[in-house]
Amino acid sequence: MKTIEGNMTLTGKEKIAIINGRFNHIITDRLVEGAKDTFIRHGGDEKNLDLVLVPGAFEIPFVLTKLLETNRYDAICCVGAVIRGATPHFDYISAEATKGIATATMRYGKPVSNGVLTTDTIEQAIERAGSKAGNKGAEAMSTIIEMLSLYNKI
Ligand code: INI
Image (cartoon, rainbow, N blue to C red):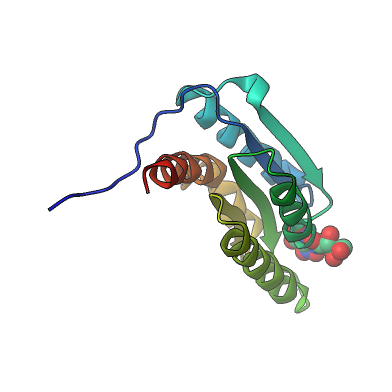
């Protein structure tokens, strides 16, 4: 049986963008740090890493689609933090961000990862932004490193 699997090593030539939904930036800045650190640790060259800031998670799919259209990037890592409040806003924003990221990924056929936190509380977000439950930005970057390698093999 032949197994086809991505590896976790970058050559230094890959061009990757991070899109950060700035809303709840105390959290999302930590996600960007985690993603950047993972990119560099796995062999990425910092000059090939761009950070694109958008106001919130709702705007991520639009900018993601625009960036994919340019064909400038090999893969794109999306981070953001949607935290539940007193109104149904959370449900609309998180659903649109998730659906939009998935739609753009399928449409442009490039590795994209979803590192947008959707949490009930700020504490849950802090736990996932570099403390108790790891760093979801770092995980999102690891995912596209593996997917990019797999993409190049198939
Ligand atoms: N955007 C987020 O990224 N996280 C949130 O928790 C959030 N809340 O709670 O409102 C949020 N709202 C802004 C939204 O993403 C858009 O920027 C805004 O609706 C304008 O389109």
